[in-house]
Image (cartoon, rainbow, N blue to C red; front, side):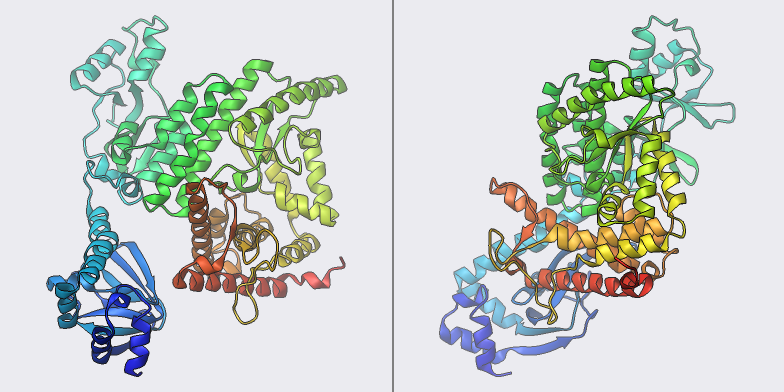
Length: 635
């Protein structure tokens, strides 16, 4: 290292590039160089303060805090040209966060005396650090991470970091389940509560009654208030564990359309959690969107509510939610929207002549939607007993499905360009025909059959007779057993979609056209992981459709996932979150969200992480080639 090398480096980064030549030379002449191997803990939370301002010359670090032993909250990743350690350097008391090298890292170290002198004498230098750096990276983030006050603004972040037990601190009010409706109502009125937990003779929870039950089942029906409360209580009770995070409770409330959850701790009743509690925690709640959906009775009134869903994505992302958490919540809300549309359709067209199940596939089937994507849906209906019954079913579902298609378009879900929708008569069929489809695709794996398999085998039921979907899934798993030729062909198909990483670990981008210097992050990055998880899950007979759920279930069932499961999940989460960030940035510029990114716009650490993720996928694809031998099967 020479003084000139250090000076040249500093002259290109903020805020050192604001210094005059002589001052910069003095700083460069006093710099110390240190090397930190990967995983070195450079600074420790609550440990000694930093004795230097460290400037990353090469490599990268992770800045994180640990609110408790089992929890790690990442504040930031920093790479070449970034600094760390200023706050504890200036205050001289302790380090506020942990800083660990995520790769072999070289840092330039500037002494406290030099930095303090610059802060005192150079206004632009001081403003950069004290306003931009401290506020953005340390003070604000640190206080948000540690604050558990419901009055604090970081509500959605708390949704993913606050255990249910902390929120449901009050004891649930209970009463015997044999008391009268009148007595129960008096208890609720006196205690000013919206729900009452009813217990049996052994003092165990037997049911719950809410103010809604009193309105809908007693007042509106003119029911005798002398009747036992057990006649209107809701069972079974929905519970959540005290150690679960609040977003898990939120998912249950959305999924089951309930507003109260019992909180249990090691089997014992701990308290009760309401949707109001979660709304107080968040400030803006996805539950409020679901409630809006449930109150709408026609498509025109659903349209403005559907537009709120994208704002939830933005809000959750801004407050630090993982990609997997965002997609799970959005999928639940989208499911509720689809169910409401189907309910409106049934009122319009009357009761269906046969039982049916509305299924979704693609990203919706895998619960991996963020912003609204093309429609991917179909209908399975029970096998008609006669030809006449079949004709009635087809006539009914023709109008029904066209109505649903147009309603979804109005709510922001465009038509599928390839026609994979229930409005296409090919994709609204009785169970027998669906079984025939699946059997043909598996036993005659032509390119078209493989394409259909990759699309439709991710199906998931949303509304109707769920048993029809369960029967089809069971048939699929049974038919796939020992179908080595099919799996070899499927492996061959997914081998054709390789991540855009060249031999020398450079990104492969489009050479010309609309997306010059870009690549499709969804198709080339997320797609291969989805394909890998699907292949392994189908081969092992799993019924899960979500990529993360498939990987979790495969950890003790498939050799590749046993070895690399954690790394695959991390790569999937990272690439998915990168894609969501990119789409949010486009929407903030009033542009339509899409999947093409220019890698030159990424930070150094993002580029490195993306290359490592792509290399992991390539390694797994090579392992698949060895396991499934797709090249040995005649095409």
